[in-house]
Image 1 (cartoon, rainbow over the protein chains, first blue to last red):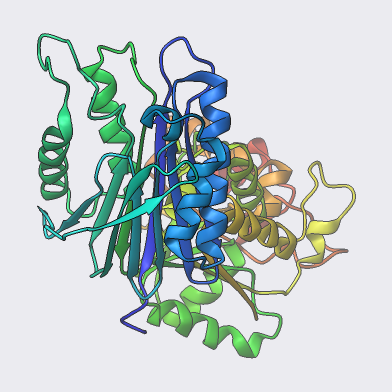
Image 2: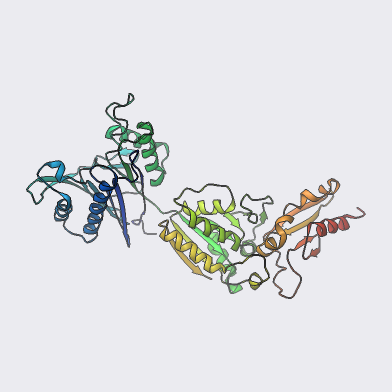
Length: 394
Length: 86
């Protein structure tokens, strides 16, 4: 395993100003190979106009970054798009923060008019300096861009947000001057120390959740928080289907036994084969499952054993309807999906021996071919949930 | 210690779809005096379904006897028969 290859988890959570139908903050992400570029932009004002401005600014910012345009030239072009008049507020129609990173952990952060980024390492704020670059827009106004470049270590985090977050709580009795950058830093320090492996997803939700409370649940400014979390990837292996050739049964069992991560076996026959090869006992948990699916089984060394095609079909449906990574419920399908979504790398090993009885047209339900259902699941995990997925056929 | 009668209920895909879901909770249908003489287990697959022309799912094994197209009634009767006289 290449120790320089991180898994990079990114997420953004946003809430808009009370009474507005859309946020004036826009967050965009672009992935290309091992590279991930994120942009967070805050459009001047609120509502649709602000959203349009921020949308244009953020797509330009991402486009220029992806094309490796010189930063200052790009910044000038971006700011010039909406600059009108001489007054500074007319020029600064939107803010932006760009985080450009890749799997080796090299990071470049470019900031324009947003609150300063926070870099967390070992439970502390990393006091990395940022370098000011001055650039001039068409009407002669001089503006500042701040650039940070560094190499991330495992477990490093970067947190960025728009000004709605530090401004939250402003003019309330508890925090008359607002939450402030220092208040946010304190909360982040406390949170990552309390839960060292907190995901980027949970972290941004906590920040926005607190900001919403600060505003007494009547949000005064659009607020967004995005985070990047560099860590070692969490792997899971899903084995489903008996190998086409029984000679490969041993190989499949060995893959499960030697896997460096959690394992799921989906399929009764598959589970029996592996239990036989590894000489381990398998026992079915005889109780009704809230999902209505066949019961799960247990075996030493395997995290979860479920039935095959019915369960996989439900997993696929659940992945289709989920709006984010939050999975509710205790049925086997929910447990399965939760397990998949809490890992970064998902490796499917699909045995292609087909049980022809499953294709009997007289059956009361239609059982899709296992390999097709898994292909759909894999595609959803990759495109909707940004997981790294592989399928190998045995 | 008296050896219990082992009843294996297949919880595999085909058996489940063809009625095995009900059989899973067969202990709810057993008369009380039989409950402690029986050890009800599940099996992820009993491998009886592979024959297209043969007996049909769902399958239950009561001791050594294989019951095809199992229903709660059939299985309870088979248990009573197996335990009859004990």
